[in-house]
Length: 188
Image (cartoon, rainbow, N blue to C red):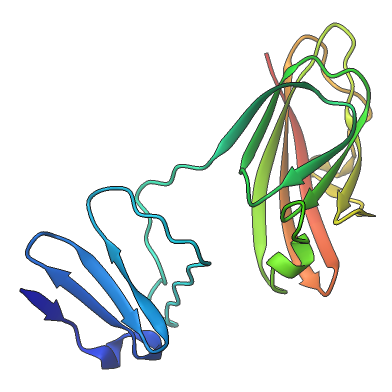
């Protein structure tokens, strides 16, 4: 048996359904129904949950993010595709200073992926050998952006024989305009 909630309480007239097996569904005008069950569910669209001035739009108990682990050395320009991973981990010792270029994917710009007022946070884990290097240029869609670093000073070196974790929070402030908050942390 399917139970329908009062559509007047759901933003945009969406209808949430629940049945005795615990499956939940969401139906809205012009949108195909989405059913969430106790197994894995993939939604191949951007999911927007909207709250009100007195309620949150979404509560998440557990989140798993995709991490790409690659036996690659940081050097040159590294294209960081945010639609592929939230964490990128290079396990081979860095061999030179590098540029990180944030984009949606090889065919999608970050500018077209994000709306003004949206942010995302990603991490880049870089293995360092006896000679350490660092991220000296940051780009979005191939254009340089000067990050605002934790503590107010950009790193001028890596940390030898460790793993440097770079965290970047990217905020879209306008069309092709981004503010990036960054940090470098040594893990040994």
